[in-house]
Image (cartoon, rainbow over the protein chains, first blue to last red):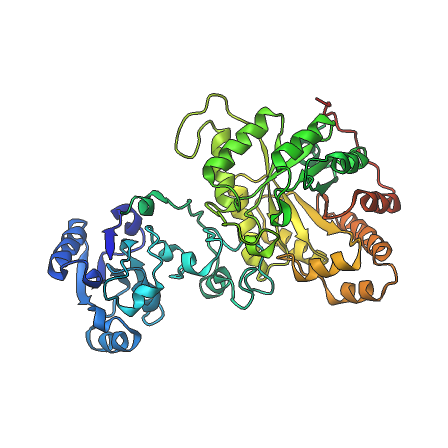
Length: 195
Length: 300
């Protein structure tokens, strides 16, 4: 799995001065101690205090183990930053009350490696934007990959393409209310340039 | 007066969509459009409607312009990426096209050519932003244009979407992105527009109400079952199903609703969706509406 830390400007407006961090070994793609040093340098360099780090090994990257880990090791914090693929922040946001923000973009998931189970939820789209849309992965849930709200084709809230699936923007609206910002188009060069 | 001038000066305008031909024979497209020329303010040219191969909306719009009819050029992102969309609207401008209606587009599998790869590089709001940028002299890569276009930009509004507030918030963002007029999906409940107007306080969206005339039972069933985003109330379905002549009844219902729309003062015009020109003329004949002023678009 290939991850890149996001530009600070993108994360900055979403968090406060103290964060709790989730890290992992990128499904075997990175050496975790080295990765965590980079994370610390990145956050402390921007004056952010790390309240704690949980390293989620691939064998614990599943819902039951995560629940247990949260009970035992998680320190409640308003903001959680994940330096994992986009799967974990989708799951975490339904388990804890903190604002969960992905701090990295997932550029590539290699299938030959042993993957944690949350990796299946990540589209590896190169530009994770779930924090703009209530931690729902629109890349995965919307056939048209709409950035700025529903396409208008939904009937009684159900997708025009998959008629038994509720439109993710309707779920988002019911959970979080209105989306006010206009999200710019995706930068496809991020994934197109991956080998 | 152009479509833009009429709408911005508060006239009640009438538009209809026309579909470019499937094939090279232009006769029925031109004939049908010419039938509407003197009664309507502008004609929307659909963009590969129902995911079917046709003459493009750009060429269709140009053909209308040649006949002295003012076109509203529709563009979607289903079949074109951001490069093609920006190139296409620049081309439209040099051909004399001034109105653009931006849509995301129906999904490929909901239409005819189901096996085609859907593009959806950018959504309708992002398309609007890109066209607005072109009008300000730059493309989306930041390259400076030699000569910038000027468009009257429109977008679609679906009052049937629930929750309505979500669609209203999208309407507002479309406006912020550059849309100056809206054409709605087919709907039958004026209270939805009333709610929309109540919710939007600081500006007044110009919305044309989408109406249609069901020419046959097949078309009626198709619209109910297959066309995304359409919701027809049970009462209307029952009346139409019971009627001996669905077209005749549909013309009557449409004319009544158009009258209500105009009297309500909630909308800025009517937009006929998927209706045959002869049926549109029949509705207008029943309404005894005359175009307020003839369009001064010259045939080119």
